[in-house]
Image 1 (cartoon, one colour):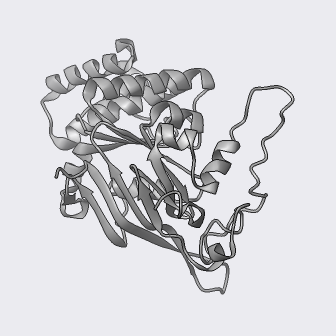
Image 2 (cartoon, rainbow, N blue to C red):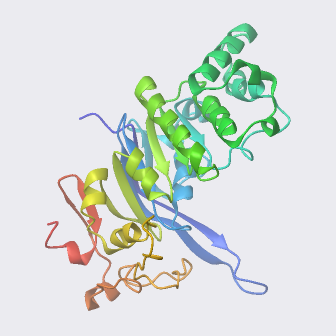
Image 3 (cartoon, rainbow, N blue to C red):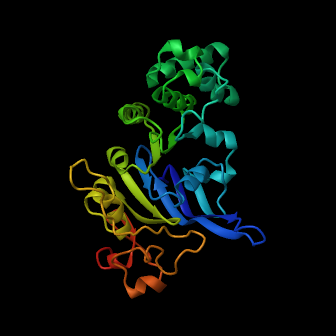
Length: 321
């Protein structure tokens, strides 16, 4: 059986956090036993509230943070055993803010060409040709080759970031909120560009976003994260059409609607956000869950799978045997 392109197996990652002056440091478990599979050619959307561990997962998949336990595998081989440059050739990031992720002192051409120089790909003439070809592919005019990031619009900067990520022909892009810093009118252009590049180059994406509309438009499969755990995972159509976990239902109910007079949606989650330094016992979501049962307070729900979907919820025990 062919292994997935990228896989996480029961991965955990914790951080020591200062609790204040003269108080001992406390442990924050950002990722708690996460297992994910990224198959070649798909778009896996990763959603959840701020602080749930999404960006920590992205950093571990990029090799920037080692997991404390569990394994991360690239086509069945441990990421930790691979050369750092070899990983970078195959997995590249596209960050949230295209201005802060670009060197303001370098020209567009130099920024896009830098990975080629680092990996020793081609001579100066070949690199220049590859840079212009990639600029054309992502919709950047040749005249911008000598421009600096400060002279570009937000959408142009993100195109530069995408070109830099793709210049070494990676297989996987980790897109961490790739459009949230852009104007709404520009977001659709960047999303359409990412879709076109995926089809043309056979790319695989991990898409991290708070924008559920973006995830529904882009993702083929979606994983929902809460307090360091994946609480639900399913094909995009299934998850958006028939969510099983109460937290997923609340997320979908939180989406604003343009219809006048409806006001702000009521998710039923309350105003209090859980403290990741003191996670609840049992099911971590039970203090905010409108459907919580006594069992939820003391017993962590097991992961149950059916028809390619996975959910961690006691309520779903009968529906997903």
